Length: 100
Image 1 (cartoon, rainbow, N blue to C red):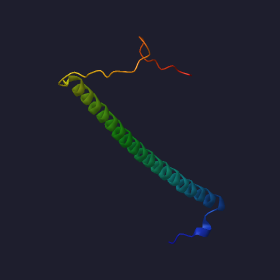
Image 2: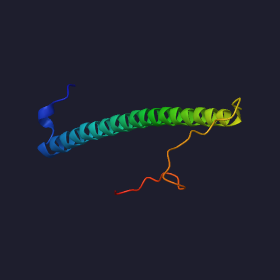
Image 3: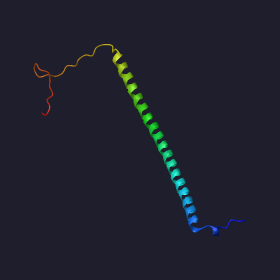
């Protein structure tokens, strides 16, 4: 016995068509949501890597600068610096006045 599609009522065909359309629409929405989650995850991973790299570079620069300053403060320079004579006006040292 073969299945005769003309024997099925119109209301049943509309109902089955609506269910199929709903399943296709639900599959599309679920796929789009899943792809959006993947894109957000990839974006977050990229941002995490970029910010971690930048933070590591800044931290490295700060550590290097700190070591350089600490090393420079411990270095002893042989001899003393001789002060250079500055031209003066009478008994007062030269003063640079602003706005004059």
